[in-house]
Image (cartoon, rainbow, N blue to C red; front, side, top):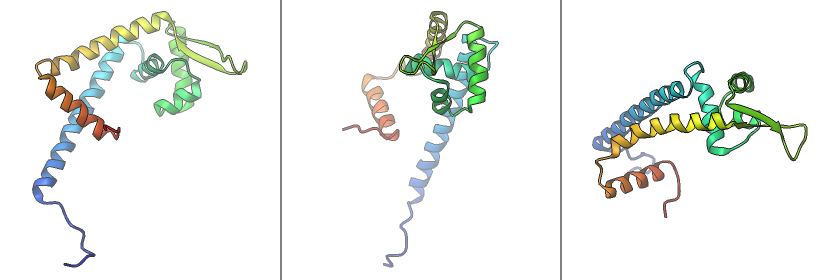
Length: 155
């Protein structure tokens, strides 16, 4: 056999990979739609991207605008505009960065935190409905497989 020929997967493997791709697309599309609905529950007057900032601050704590831009894959001007709206509505506050008095840290206000938790709870309930009838062993397998897929060491 010629060593320069690359082995090609059989057609059943290709079909499985295509099916996986289709299911991942369904998951990503449904997740995006649910994120948009969750953002509207948080505050329907804001763009969904503003809720992305809120969720990031809720999960990770205070941050600079630069870190928010990098972490959310938004440009700084968009983050600045959205943070201004969030501050105006009382969801985000800015404080002087303790280590560098010139810097500014952004964080959620108590109102922002409470509303974010309420909106996220509604989102979680949608996912919990989907797995509510699964056996624990099926859920364990699903979590394990997702960890593997996401590149986490599962040993």
